[in-house]
Length: 264
Image (tube, rainbow, N blue to C red; front, side, top):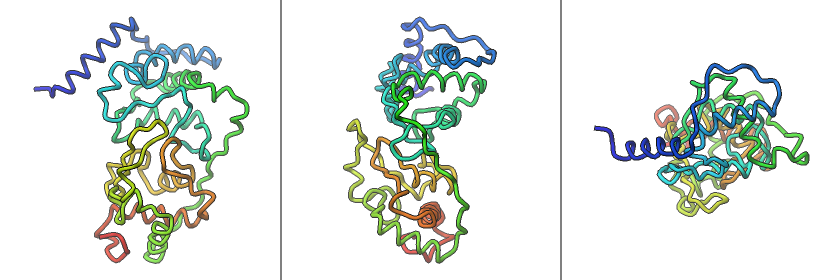
């Protein structure tokens, strides 16, 4: 028996296609060199694959949005969490492509790796037309994060990471042991006023944008736009961000690092 919620979402999705009168795009697609043409073709794929959640205009108000635990992003704002650019900046084209390809873990945003890469780049071109920020010359150039050489994981380094975790008050949201149960966790909201769940750092499956320690370092460098997670580029040195990243990633391995304060 298919769960009721899945059947309801499936019916709403089918209804969205019917009401919108959108026909499924034809494959395979030909390479389109002109950016405007790519965006025009991307619009067709967006209406088919993305608008049921993000809405026809990209405002996050698609017909099934209200049934999702995580609200779809309002793409008209040009505010993206998953980026390789400095805090507050737009994402690069590849950042958007990566999100379309891999999806957002633990959220309602699925991976679209099954789409032809050319189609995914067409979607990137179209998504950028939904926000005026991408056409504003004052938004450029983008300052992309340069990934430095990782620091080795050592007991001394993890102890240093723990000290930084405490000094930066990461425990306010993520809790003393990283379980997402800090005293400020119940009060965290995004820029639109929606409640934000503080990540349980001890559970790898809870990470939305990180699949390795380098991703954690990147997040500490860029921050997550639109939510309370800040960038530490101006407050922590490069080595300190690596120590903190190593410590946070080690929170998943209680047995491997039992002697480090805060991991038990």
